[in-house]
Length: 361
Picture 1 (spheres, one colour):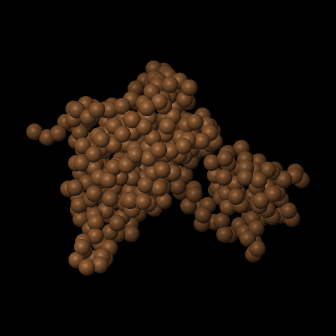
Picture 2 (cartoon, rainbow, N blue to C red; picture 1 turned 120 degrees about the vertical axis):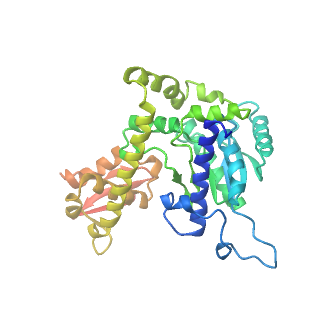
């Protein structure tokens, strides 16, 4: 008799991602392609790093970021089961944000659970959460900084994250509320970070599947009280917004939103590629953007070039919103002699002699 369907589903999702990671380590192919499923189970000798003497190099390490919640515990259990079969080492990281009383003790409990699953190395990292961008964004920034540091310290090939289809649907709705365009609607990528460091195996699985997998395996889980706190936007969306949408529109809203994310990501990637291909052709010999050449481009392509130029000039990407780019765009499409546009990061955009100058003010 095989494993419970929920357990089988999470293991299959993790197995596919581990195959992709092995494929990336052995062959310079595009991350996440179908060919990655057929990757070899172990690194061939010719691709393994050389070592001195007769000591074989360690197997590649894959880490799981685990909060102790159902999603990440299900992910950790699947990684512990699948990684050794593919010749990979599996470790775990938990981040203590210090935002709740006893968070350090909770982190120690998670370390113990990951160790019991057979993961090694296992580490708890305490971080200091700032205030920039609001509590949720600040906690996220601190968490990813800690995970990046852990990946480099342990020389990890990848870090697995437990975001589910439900998380993806919430991210799409949050992007829609911000009105930030198609890239915002594309949600979370299955592969992201430096060199494809972060992998999200569960984006096609719902939250209940992960919880069920924990239950049938008798894995203890922790429900973060912040996830039910109405002070947080995502919490309100999870407990009030999405249920209201499903009541009004019927079941299937979460699946539809997740599908929208993938379609939006495909479109956004294509437009980004288009903008990258034509950018050089709209610059003069000195590198300045020529307004007449920008004007004839489709708005979606032109605004991507403008956004990229603003970021290159020093505007922080996280603070550069659609309204900023629209104002700069009007220097191209609605030129009536208006003055310079002030952008985040003390960057200024202005039109001079048919050229668009974007620089530090």
